[in-house]
Image 1 (cartoon, rainbow, N blue to C red):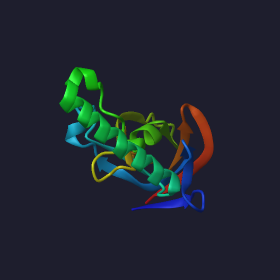
Image 2: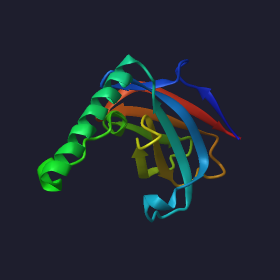
Image 3: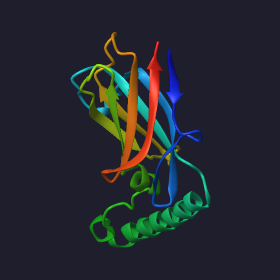
Image 4: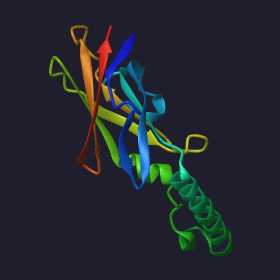
Length: 161
């Protein structure tokens, strides 16, 4: 069992493109999903973040819907090459710029091995997977956040039981 022993009161750990990003969960013994590819360890730490629903996210979703509909029409009319790449979901743009980093009280080297953000039904969700799983002697982990490489000044500490 884990307990968050300190974090921002609203759990907002970052802001990007006008969207606040909230810590949604931390799992310290998570399996890295098979669709993330081969990783050196099978279990590790999963950090979940969500974009907070707001007028900004609604406007971004509306703009994305218009862009994807236009892209589909262009693709049908002029072919895939003329249409270009699929428009990015706004959650991809917002969340992919946010990066958690993990440290602990034993200087364990936690490596980011996989992440994903946005998708059908999870438009504003993101998950980051780190290995290894915390060693037994670790009492707590600290998670700090950056947006486009700049520290947000927000962190969370999770007590491991």
